[in-house]
Amino acid sequence: MTTRYMDYSGNMMADGDIRMPGKDKLLQATEDRTDSGLDSLREEDYNNMLRETQNLSIHSEQNIQDYEPEPWKMQANEDGDTLLHLAIICEINEVAVSAIKRSYRDTFYLNRQNNLLQTPLHLAIITDQYEIAANLLEAGCDPEVRDHNGNTALHIACEKGSLQGVGVIVQNCKSHLKPLLQYTNYNGQSCLHLASINGFLAIVENLIMLGADVNAQEPSNGRTALHLAVDKQNPDLMFLLLKHDADVNRVTYEGHSPCQLTWGRNNLQIQQHLLSVTEENLQHLPHDDEEDDDSSESESEHSDDECMYDDVCISACSGTL
Image (cartoon, rainbow, N blue to C red; front, side, top):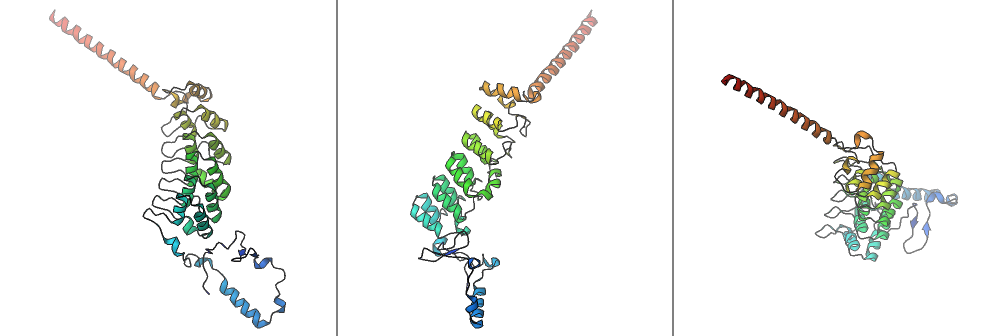
C-alpha cells in the first residue's frame, strides 16, 4: 500500500488526530485507547492486522520522494502566481480558505513564490487580509521566506505600519520570532529600522518589547534606530528609543554619534537633548577641529612665505645701493 506525504483534504489535525471524511468526529490516536480488544483476537487475525499496520507506517526519508501534488497545485500564470496567490490578490476569500485547507502542512505549496518571490503570506499582509494570514500560518507556511527585496512578511507589516499584521504574525509563529526580529532586508534594514524610518511608534515599542535589539545597526552604514530618528527629525521617536535604553554613544561605521548628526539640522529640541546626554567627545563633528588645524597651518605657511619674500626684497635692495 503506497503512503502519501500529505493529506490534501485537510483531515489531519494539529494534535495528530484524524478526522473522518464527511463525519464530524475524530479518530483518536491508538495510544489514547485503553480497551483495544486484542485479547479476543485469534493469533492469525492479530498477525494479519500487525502486517497491515506496518504497511501503513510512514518513514521520514520518504516524505519528499512520495510527495505528489494535486494537478491544480502545479498550475501558475506568467507571473508565477498560483491559484492561492490569485485568490488572495483578488480577495476571493472562499477560494483562498479552501485552497489553504486542502494544503494543510503542504509547505511546498504554501511557501511557493511567484516571480517577485512573494509567498501567499506576503500577499495576505500586503492586501490586509489578516484572517487569511492567520490561516496560512496555522496551516504551516514559513514566515521566514523573503521576497525579491529581502523582506519577510513581518518586514512588510512594519513598513506599512500595520499593527494588526504584526500581531497576527507574532501570535502565530513564536518559534520564528527571534530570527524574524534579527533579519535585515537587502537594504540592510531590520523590522525595527523600517518602523523607525516611517515613524510608527506603536510598532517600534512592540518590537522592542518582543526582543528586538534597540541598538541594532544597519549592516550598510552602522546606523541605529536613534540615528534614524535624527535623520527623520523625529523627537517623539528619539524619546521613545531613549526610554528603552538606546545607546546615545553608539557610532556609525564612519564614527558619527546621533548627536553629531544633529549639526546642520533644524530641530533644536533633538540637538539640545542629545547634547545633554552624549559623551563630550561625541557631541561635535570631528572634522570641525581638523578644519581649524588646517586653517592654522595654512596661515603659518603663509606667514613664513611672506617673511621669506621680505628677506629677498631687502637683500636685493641692499645690493643696488
